[in-house]
Image (cartoon, rainbow, N blue to C red):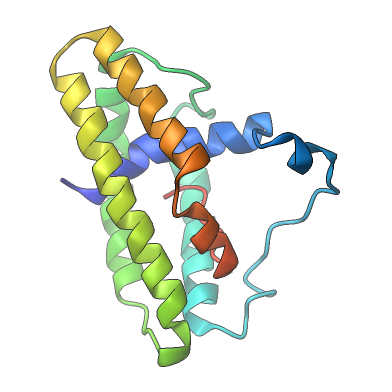
Length: 169
């Protein structure tokens, strides 16, 4: 399964989570933290370069989704059409990300990003399989299951701890 398809699924969820401010109640009461920028993680060449790639990718992906993330399940046909639009974006991103040199100091961050890619592939398989049935209810259930995973059991905190800010992949 191509990583791009997974990111098609996940960018919607991550952008929707960011847009709606999802999180537990303790997070809502806390003072918002600005996301780390490439300047704040400049000590890691890998992280800084990856964050630059991610920052450049995000507006392109949002544009492919018509300018906004999907806040809830959406028609299978739309999912399939959008997947086709973003696939080339993700293939290019993956090639660039894979070309970034990883030093020993960057290993934890690189491993965190790879774990995210693997989780994305599992989510993609679930979404694509559900879409292939043509049954909207099955697709909707997969959508919610994927988002539940990323809200509650995800490797995303490992990305954040490594300083990786990549909402579009």
